[in-house]
Length: 103
Image (cartoon, rainbow, N blue to C red):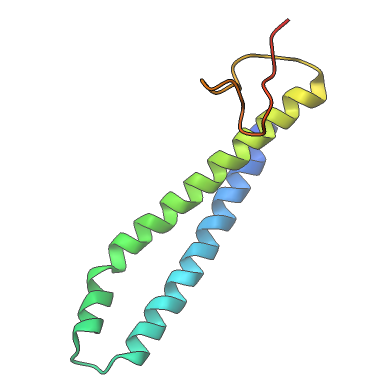
């Protein structure tokens, strides 16, 4: 079974970005709980955002992985010498100020 290498870096980036976001979330929620006295409204807010913040950590990981995949795709196309129009945005650029024109 061969490893699909074009998916390796985005998948690795997704895992790392999500783990970093989860670590920051844990630090923030722990700090909020320690800072606020027990029966305050801040602890209620921490309880209320616990699940939603998990989902946002995953969304952040997906966003970072998507950006890495786009950059990896553009660099791969430049390295191979292939030129394509699919990496261009409607404004005529691919995000780096240039557009790869098809021959």
